[in-house]
Image 1 (cartoon, each protein chain N blue to C red):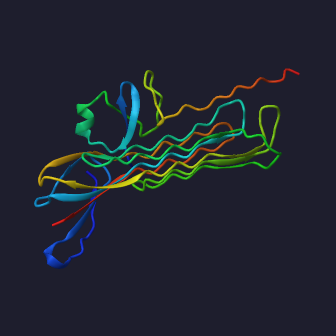
Image 2: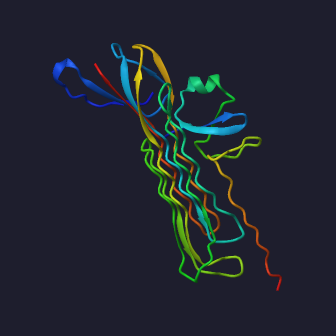
Length: 188
Length: 64
């Protein structure tokens, strides 16, 4: 289970606030002495859309949606929508170039950046113009406060980042969305 | 590297999750499909909003 624990700050009254981040795995064990937790769920980011400039030889695809992050008893955080793809916009003659989208880092819940390309017209099947794939949406961020039982196990799932939209002919692919995470706070 | 899994219910992808524990995968062999190296659109599985199909537009060449 991928868990990182931040150094807690000491506070008055002998209580310490602890923060735990879950980045993988499926089951969390409530620490001894803990009866209440604050849990913040971040859904996966959607993938960025791809592009293409040619009306034959392959279409691009939209980015996939990010996965929903769940934690039993808490409100789930939905993943971001996938970015739309862009196929062969008609336009004026132009230069030629492509820029693939940007994938987001794991456990950020950020949407992937869409691909981009510019294309001069050529023949009857290659349309000039500039094509942008839409960026993926960010995952939801939702906090809940739960009453829990010390020592019990709580199931969860981390939403993955949405898949990147693929490139068609002369196009550019999008970037993948970042996966989600779960942040837990409790006092001991 | 994150290992990616599609969650399948009624032959449709209903969620995508990361780094599921091996024990969970082994106990539910029909529920999870790994796609770390890409989604291959397996036959009979609806990718839903997670794995949208490319938009295909067909044009006709001018024979002249």
